[in-house]
Length: 141
Image: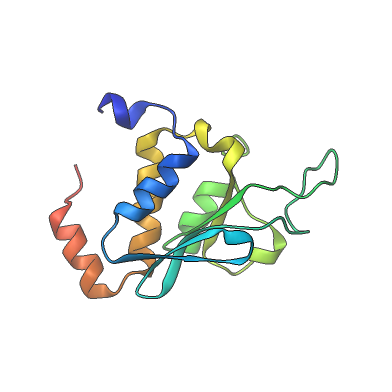
């Protein structure tokens, strides 16, 4: 693993990695939050504070939630079931193939781990043709 892949991830990496995937466009939602899309389907977006994602100690809404699509419910469960994982979900996202991550906890992931989550998010939303082309150009190590 390269030094870059093993270093702690940063919020800037979310933007850089999502933008680097092919055929990506960026829309801006409410509050000028970026929404990264492939084929007009979002795969990563920065969310406004919402009542379903709150600090359990204070009840304050989290101001820094990032949403990542996942390929399957099994992938979602693998990311959210481990209590030490920075990924989480809320009842609002029941049945939705996505996980949440607070920007404040991005550094708990390595750059390589974040890249994998973003690539999987992109693959889960890209057309079959685009996904197959990307996978053939980026075989698993």
